[in-house]
Amino acid sequence: MSFDTEFKFENFEEYFGDADQVSKIINECEVCTAKMVHTHLSDYKNLCVQESSRCPDCGHGNRKKIHVLN
Image 1 (spheres, rainbow, N blue to C red):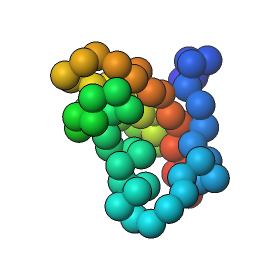
Image 2: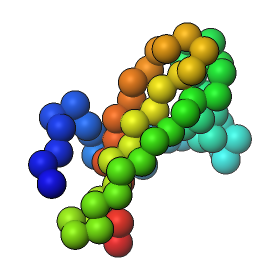
Image 3: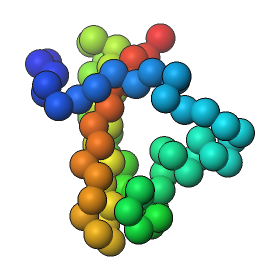
Image 4: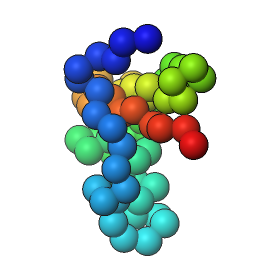
C-alpha cells in the first residue's frame, strides 16, 4: 500500500491541554465548530491506519493523518 503524500503521521506533541481540549482539537471543525466526520482505511500488513477528517456542515478541513499500530 502506498501512502498519499498529503497524509501526515500523527504526533502527540500537537495536542495540548486537558482531555476536553484535546477532544475538541480532534473532533471539532476549526471554522464552524461542528462535529468532524472521520473515515479510516486500515492496513494491517504495514500496521497503519489512514484517517481522513472532514466537516459535513461547511466542507472545511480535509485533515489526513496516519496512525501507527503497535
